[in-house]
Length: 236
Image (cartoon, rainbow, N blue to C red; front, top):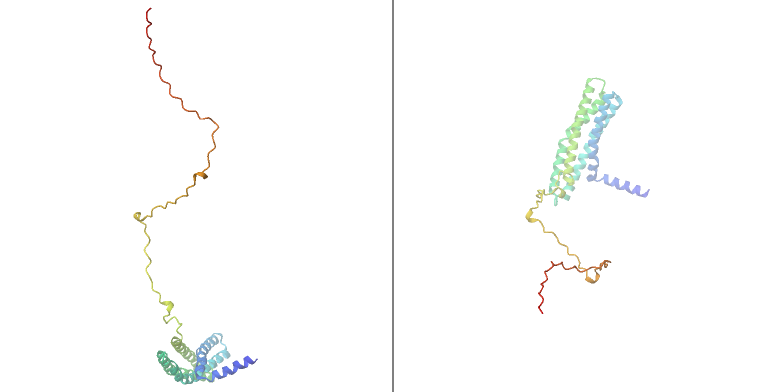
């Protein structure tokens, strides 16, 4: 419970700070206008008079939230300039330019408050004037919502370098041409590798078993028969 109370106290203190208050109110402008336009369109389609009136109230409240937002943004601008003027002067310039654009669109929110209030007082379905004011309120709300979203995007570009619009180190990749295919030429063939086998000592070579048959020497070839010389007998 004590932690809950501490968080509430810190939030109350943060809302009193103009630097946080303008960040808190800014999304309410766009989302309030968008929700009011959708509710009004559904009310026209379903012919629900209470839903149409509620949508006009939402549009008027979203348009009125612009004025405290503008005051908080103007109050926060000097501190923003002191924080970023040394290291990031471009942010100071961008914030001041966006503030000027917000002030330039103030007529849209003023006109929307007048149209929505007049439509509620006259009644949407009472006559053509009320119906025309309701259509005008819807169109002005769409224009104001588009401008609010665009200015929010401009602030995001200045203060969020992780957006894809900025160049990040991971995007700095040099593209190399693929290497040419390897072509093996006949003259570049490697010679076959000869693996020497270990020489086994003679003492370890097994002796083949002796054959059971006797090995006889080859006989000399037979010669042709020679004629014998006959000598005559001597006389007595």
